[in-house]
Amino acid sequence: MSNGIVKATGRSDWKVAVVLGSGSSGLAREIVGGDPISFADVEGLHASTVAGHEGALYAGDVSGVPTLMFAGRVHLYEGHGPRAVTSAVETAIGAGCDTIVLNNAAGGINLDLDVGAPALISDHLNLTGQNPLMGEHDERGPRFPDLTNLYDAELRNLARSIDPDLKEGVYAGLTGPTYETPAEVTMLKALGADLVGMSTVLEAIMARYLGAKVLGISVVTNYAAGTTPEPLSHEEVTAASRQAAARLMSLLRGVLERLY
Ligand code: HPA
Image 1 (cartoon, rainbow, N blue to C red):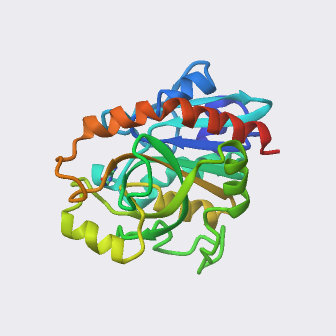
Image 2 (cartoon, rainbow, N blue to C red):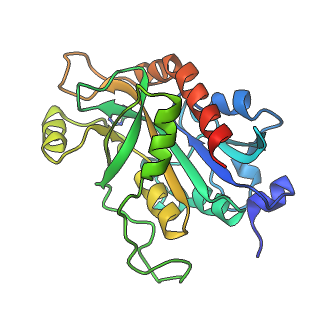
C-alpha cells in the first residue's frame, strides 16, 4: 500500500512519531536534525498555516530509535476536517509507528499546574463536536473503540521516571480559534478539565483506533481566561513554550532513549 512518509523518507521501519505543538516545533531540528521535509511534499499530509507551526517533518534515528518528528500540525480551526487533522498520525502509523507522542500548548485551568512547564495528559474531554472515525467503517480498527487508558499509564510512568516533577491532568479539546470565555473556563473546570487546548484529542482517537500507544504532553503556556486579569495572546503562548523548551527536550530525548 502506498504511504506518503515511506515514499518521502525511503524507509518503512519508523517506530515513534512526535507531533510538536505551538512554539515547540523548533525542537524537531535539534532532536532529530537532518533536512526537513515540507508537509506539502508528503502525500497524505496537509500544510499548516499557523505562526509557530513550521509544517515540516524531520525523520531520523534518535538514540537508535527510528523517529518521525512533526514540526507543526493542522487544526480544525484552520478549516480542515477531522481526517485532515489526523492525517499525520494516520500516515505515521502506516509507516510503522506504534507509539505516538502528542505535544501541545494548553491553557492551565487547574492553578496547581505551572506556566512554562510541561504537564502530562492523563485523559481528555473531546469537546470539538467532531470525531475522525465518523463515516463508513474502514475496518482498520474496531467500530466502537474503547478509549480507556488512551493516554497510556506506562508511558506516563516512563515520562515521570525521566522528570519526576511532571504534573498531569485532563485535557479538554475545543475547536478554537477563540480562546475560551471566563464562563467557559468555569464550565470546563466543573467538567473535570485541568488543561484546555485546540488540538490533540482527534489525533489520540485515531492513534487508538489504529492500535498505537499515546503519550500526551501539554506545555502550559498561560492560565486559562478569567483565572488572571491579563488578556491572552498567541505571543504569550509561543513565548511560554520557548521557556519550557529545554525541559521538554530532555523529556522527549529521555523517552526516546528508554522506550524500547
Ligand atoms: N485555551 C485554548 N488553547 C490554548 C490556550 C488556552 O488558554 N493556551 C494555549 N492554547
